[in-house]
Image (cartoon, rainbow, N blue to C red; front, top):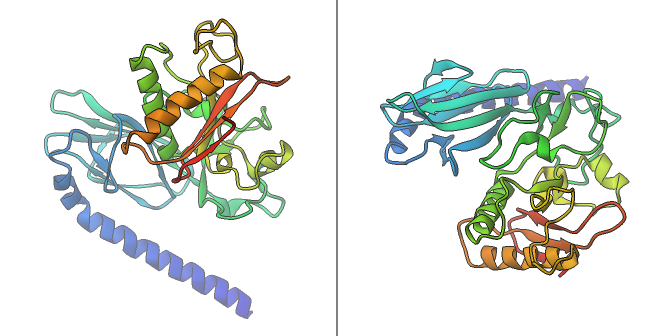
Length: 308
């Protein structure tokens, strides 16, 4: 009886806290709108968008505040809304646009209402999709992915489907996470490679993005792998030609680990010289019987280097 009382009491406290927090967001939503008036891009929950195409994660029932200029219109799923939007109770994807006075979209944001991790059952499954057990820091929720969701934009150069875990290919919905921190690193790196004339790729090939803890264990990866948090990607360039392996970016006429090392060295030099993106991990990997050479990029928040 006392266990039930404690559980219900905590649930009530959590609900009250959520209501108070959302009320505060609503009160200040109008003021946040003025704070971003001088910014080129709008802000969501106080954070200015890094790109006009981006994404935002929110839990069911939470408030999303959008700070735009006075002459800009905020559109959610085709309907004009105010500076604050209440996320529905069900997980899913919503399309946010900020439109200027001329009717042009100056920002396009995929808003993902997350499926709470509290809904993972005792076997480690979330609506039939195997998640497993996190060794620590279980995420509060996951992006719900339906069969038609592959092309949903999460940044200018990347789409949601690129980061899916390689498990249960026929099962829907699937669940995953993507990290804004790592996407900023990937976008910054890709833009620099293009500006240096090293590639004309529109995106990286993402060999491995999000991994469930269950899948991560199956392939024998690191216990605390950043892939489990959507905060890592194993990538390579594949446009010249598009053949499923790393391009010959060092120009020696062969596809070897030297290409991954060249990629690694360029990324290391770029990330070391800037404070425009947060620090993270870099790893260089050789080919094996399953895949070609590739580079690991993650946004762990501190420098980490290996494989070079």
